[in-house]
Amino acid sequence: MVTRSRILPKPQILHQKYERDCGVCVFAALVGISEEELRAELPDAHLGMVTVDDWEKWLEGRGFVVTRRKGCPDDVVPCAHLVSHGATTLEDFHWVYRDKEGDVLDPSPVNQYMPANDPRMRQLDGYAEKRLTLSVSRSGLVVRR
Image 1 (cartoon, one colour):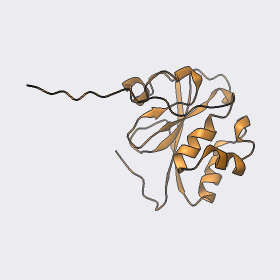
Image 2 (cartoon, helix red, strand yellow):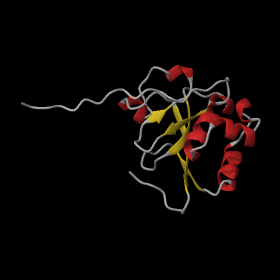
Image 3 (cartoon, helix red, strand yellow):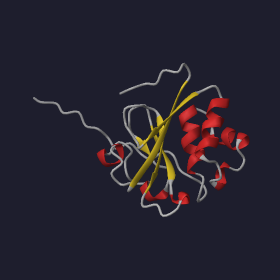
């Protein structure tokens, strides 16, 4: 008898609470803190007013070494990708989180029913533009898949 392993769909567990606060849950997941703790440190984050440079400074202030890369490569995990479904302005971009398994968690309601481990999510197929990636490490070494 042949046994087949079945991969179950991985639910989207990150959910933004406001229109512009995708970064709150993505960066909380990236550094392993609660969303409440992040909001206490960056009170305007829920307004979407934190720039990429501001996120980098905040991460470095928490003791992380930050690596910024163009595009959205999938060889460094976990990381945060800045993506859009079709940007006309900078405000049209939003953050998604790639976990240590390489699955993509998108806090936007648009993808709430798309499994994080679906190949289309893992390859970021649904995003018209893949702007940049931020990854972090404590020692200066990043985990490569």
